[in-house]
Image (cartoon, rainbow, N blue to C red; front, side, top):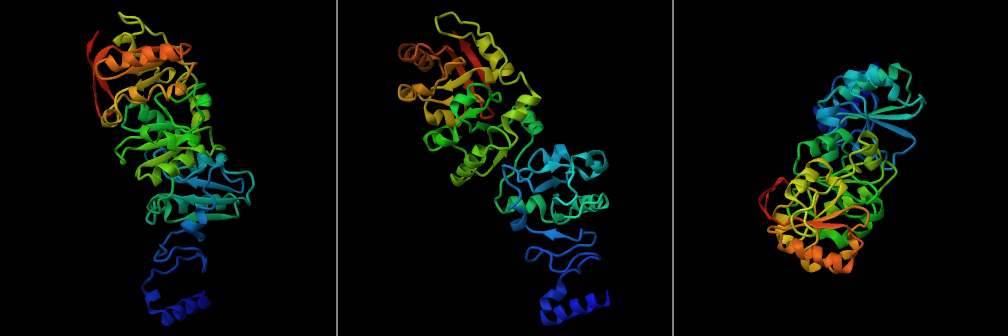
Length: 375
């Protein structure tokens, strides 16, 4: 300990600015990776790593040589946004959830929480060490610095479900190929295959602050991450991924994406009744494809949650985008353009099951709507 104090004093004498930094806590290692300007705090775990170290490990697909642990509470923190591939072991539930730790006690563990003043990850690190784990690091700057650096966050299945239940203003985007999407998807999701991202940029909301959540085929699928990067490059400021993707959703809610639906016809040929339209929107939106055939400007201002945009003047050249294995429901503001879309599809692709809503519709910015006059 005497040698340690002499070493610290020598450094302070050589570099006066260093004397203003907080002392390294008892038990901490000299030379650990701490970002410039970060002051060590009392109670920190001995092995601290920085963002550059962590981003080599926080990846999709998950690396096999590391377990990344978010020590924050689930519902209010982890679910809303966590580092890619991180598992959640809240410090308050460490003993209860310690079975989630790897069997190999020599495997690298990286723990983090809510930043420099958050002690949860440091406390959990010591608990893991007491269990015999030998290669433990704490990312002290945690989630706040990760976000500040513009690095991606993932969300949980529970969070996606809550967003849908609360009808939050968020755009959920499935980055898988259309043929896969058509076999089953999260209700209300918009399909923009990563391979066709540039082709379908017009489907993204005009407001770059609109939250976007991309998903694909699970933790081994990189399509959602690739699309999220492209969306950020376009200037979208709130982009996250649902890394566990459709496999996790289907496991948690097996009937949600593929529940059978009965469509009640309206008065005229090809129409869907307003009551049936409402029921499908509320209970099984993923069982059909809602298509807004209004102009792009109208679509960007407000539309039905989960709908895609195919303006009527683009329908003929984009008609192959329509699926054959789920019903397509066209709508607009008054029913006129929707009816034209129905007629076009029946002429050019009669194998597609199509309907249209013949009604006056008021659209709201939150993705809801109101039928003011049904015909």
